[in-house]
Image (tube, rainbow, N blue to C red; front, side):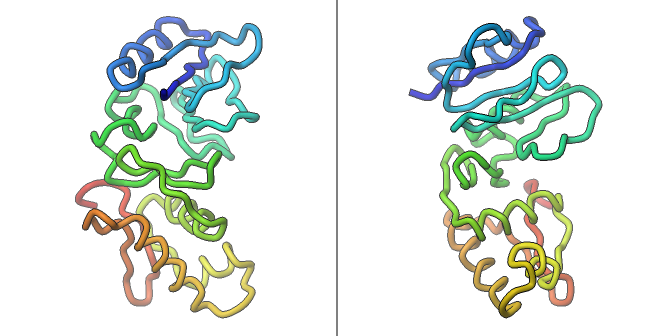
Length: 192
């Protein structure tokens, strides 16, 4: 049974998120910071009222008003957001942005249309760089220098791009774009 814990001291916001997820998740509960952090499969952390949990095995999605994504936060949505985007980022539905895979750092995997796809460490680091680039092309040299510390042959990037494509494009959708002389990009939104 999937469970989601909403971490917020803003009760109206927490209740809104709870109601939006209730049709998709059997167990949605609110934690206001009192007592021990309950175990859940996913956490929605309101960074305006609480800190993001660091010692969990679940997916952690953070949100906040009028700020950029804090460093170290992989799944981020700025408030206000559309409920479909929240559900999609948690991997609960195929709505809105789920044609774009999102990283799940706790499990070194990717969430795509409600499925969790496990990745190796190198695949995950490569995916996160492409994800963080927000659709911009990253050169093979940059990827090689960042993921593999410039060690070994640059051709390893091509090999791992192939591995990612094989894992992410099983439904016929192209999610990794390549361009001669420019490098590689992750298609973040439908039609991008």
